[in-house]
Amino acid sequence: MSLSKNEYGNLAKKYSPPSPVLKDCLFAFLIGGSICTFAEGLNLWFSSSMTEEESRTLAMITVIAITAILTGAGVFDSIAKHAGAGTMVPITGFANSIVSPAMEFRAEGTITGTAAQMFSIAGPVIVFGCSSAALYGLIIYLLKLY
Amino acid sequence: MELFLTIIKAFAVGGLICTVGQLLIDLTRLTPAKILVSFVIIGVILGAIGVYEPLAEWAGAGATLPLTGFGYNLAKGTREAIAEKGAMGILSGPLSSASIGIMAAIICGLVVSVFAKSKDKQ
Image: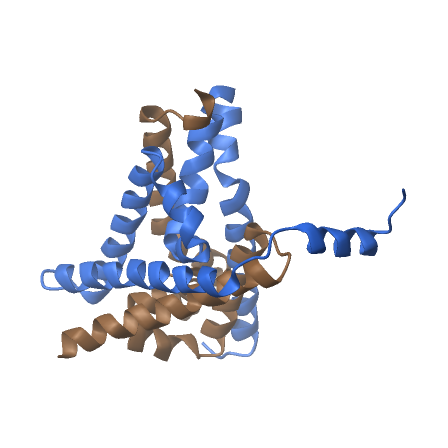
């Protein structure tokens, strides 16, 4: 039986289990919102003893460190399974995308495993994020909008 | 009361941004990596046109913690670097403003990879 790409797509759609979009979105909203609220709480707590910018940065670092610990303990993945975008979109997703392959590929060596694989997802994010920021910088520099 | 409002705003905005990501996962065939890249670029664009700044001030971590906030931070840092150093800021701004987040994640990755064993390998 030969199938065109389109037909295959339709068949795959028909036979794959229905994705409970509403439930997924609710979990993403609640868990993502909770992570942001936690960071805001840390920020409020820290801000009594430092500047706003420092407390925001320290709150972010704390969230990254907690993500790393939960990833190392194997807990993060079981939260992420239910949270979907709720843990992927906040900085937790970025941190997990670095820590998780660093652990997983350790068997392949420190250089070609851990260090190289760390950036398999974070790399593109940094490349495109920084490049688009540099492009924006070039534009405002040429138009003298800064 | 003000504290309560701050918390609610962070929760609602952070939750909504994540919900947009979830809709992209469920309704499109974009891979997670593509979605993350899109979010950062959207953050840079929204930061560039000045939309994200008021949102970040209003919602705090609700807007700055998602990856769009990472993008916004890149745009903001680049603008500040150019104002301070001129043309060199175009190249120094982006990575400098992302440096703390990236370094924190790198160090965490290294430390965890030394101490933790991947569960799949057992």
